Length: 426
Image 1 (cartoon, rainbow, N blue to C red):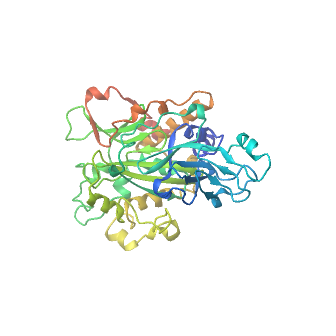
Image 2 (image 1 turned 180 degrees about the vertical axis):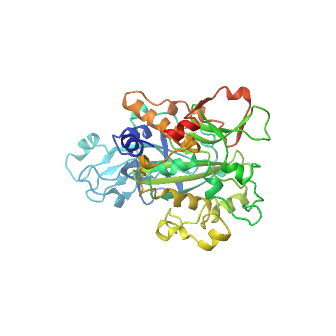
Image 3 (image 1 turned 60 degrees about the vertical axis):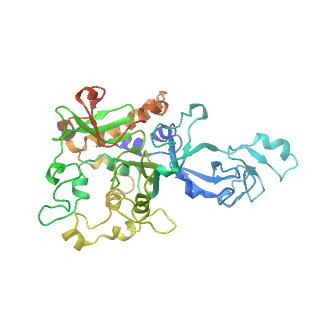
């Protein structure tokens, strides 16, 4: 459980809040590149870390992200004219480029001389892996671009979809680091074995073994990982999985195509909503049949309401739970996997969970460590110490789910987090 004060610090992400300032020290995905499909196209409303913004692609194809309101009279720039390398407010014609400069101020005789004194709030951007990335922190603290192996790959090597989640980012992020839930929430029923896959998961564990899995949490330069023993490994070796990468990235997620890797990204929209970027990538071009599978509604990419980022099965229709399916086919009566997760995270006593009412046990140790890592960094920044992670992009390279490490390699990691008993009695 967390104190009321720490829970507030963990979940509040607006300007000036400790966690909001921490997130602003990182590059974050803000929207899909496909949301801005054409140069001089329609501007797009964007909300991130509690700020209302407007995104547009200019004549040269550059992406600009500005304050959503004109600094003249606070008119909404969503209705602006995107023309000739700038976004023009339709109220009085003030025009801004992607860097926030006022390039035209036509409604006043002093406009040509005065425009150089006018700027609009704007944020640095770059595009990679089908996403527009944003840096919202102080300009003199802007770090290098992230070092993930999939950043900078050709677009033929990545596939990403965006989903809207109606809860605080931490509720859905914590689900990534809850290794025990999949053996219940995502399990199928079989009259002989209890599962649809002969009683075994893809890594050779029975359902019962998965439900009672013992693991450690290790701290890394980029965040943390789960270390577990598997019977097929050499003595002393362990598997590192479910990597947590500061501040809101993980390697959790299903993979049905050999050679591809999953990444889940949970970006805070505001205190009560999250943008979920679900990414699959490969060092080689994705095969046409794999892309066709991803583009179709399936267990990895649920079907969405046309024109939105909301799943067809959603909170408004009880995620289309089927009680007959729950009795005879799968554990929840809901499909696919991500929808099952959404159903569990979107209402934990509301969109902002009251963690003071939780009862933590040993299987929650990874979640407790992720909370601790974020809170420690936010409090340190509040005291004047900048986070190190944005400035060491090399630490994010080579991170793979289900990575086998030898006893010698394990020496580079530090076991952290509470012991099982400590978790129970906290």
